[in-house]
Image 1: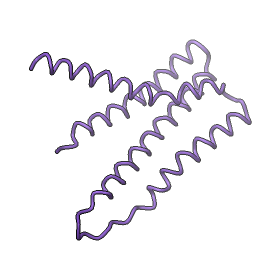
Image 2: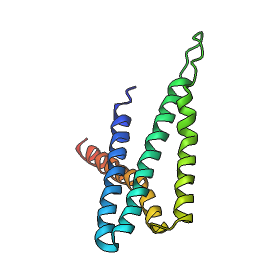
Image 3: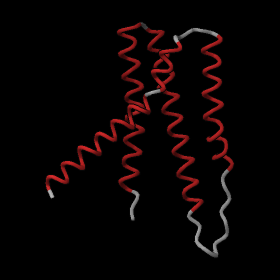
Length: 138
């Protein structure tokens, strides 16, 4: 079984997350001002980085779990642990800074963090529409 369709979907989610983060920040600048837009951009960037690190960790752990009998157990790269824990440390650090020094609105950062959710939902709609077209053509 090939992983190409999954890889393509993961790539689209990554690009869509980035696009929603940037697009949302630009709309926020126009509608709510530059501070709100900056908060959305920070949240969108964190969302994109979180998705990338999570995806990288899961891909590596899935590869490590696919050990054939008789093969030596592979070692988990230390960077995987750093990425898994680093995601939470980074998010907590940003939340702390935003709450302790309210330079940007907290709500704007939270909205930006939903960029990955919007990317995943967009990919789901794409897959549903693509599947219904394939079923109509079959």
